[in-house]
Length: 327
Image (cartoon, rainbow, N blue to C red; front, side, top):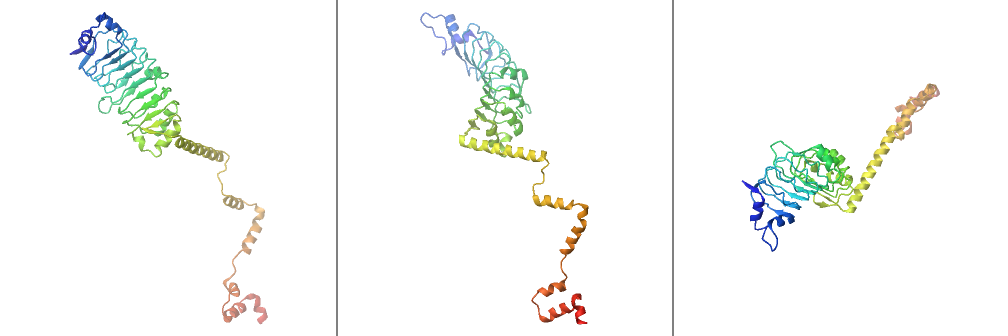
């Protein structure tokens, strides 16, 4: 088993070389960057002499546990992606850590980061999870990162909802491609809590197929500059904001009409209903009006037509009004 130790550092060509007047212990105390990526390392040994270490590169190894880093109180960048790590642990003393790269491991729950109050970037992409498993977040960890975290990468982790992430109000860059996000209303609610969001990528999620997906997110995320790799220009944003304002104003007006009982907007329909509810004393006049408007008999109508003289004569003689003249 390959273990990262002081002896390994001493043997490395990329690190300690005897310098004039500089002992190995002095070199370790002055060391700020340690590069041991892709070295088949499986464990981290005692590195307590490297007290001024600020950047540690351990990606592309076979490390299964995070340990023996309690000494690194000055560490600001930790690169441990593409290992076999299953738990985030033993990081409490890294209180100056600002960037943590832990993608490509086997982490199922994001936890144990409660003391990392200065963490600004957290990269958790491509966890190698069991079938049907998705990446989860511990509430305590999220609350502890709410005031500091600016960059979050959770690409390709089978995630289907992010409502718990709403507390990350300082977030500026959010990457969640290749997941299972589908609920537009939930996303809009979460993003409304991120007023400083500048860049976001949700490519290859089911929600991307929703109608006006891009338009909705642009209107919610008013500071967003890049969405799914495409820049948002000012003209597009202003047009969509005006469209949203007009839509909301129309909705308010409709609600006011409902509240005031003004459901009947057609005056003809309204007049019809008023006529139907006329006063009982008007019943006789209404009936009389119907009689006046009753169509004339066919024989009377024939008087007004330019037909043959014979038909006109028959129509006149058959009328009761002229029968007493013929007698």
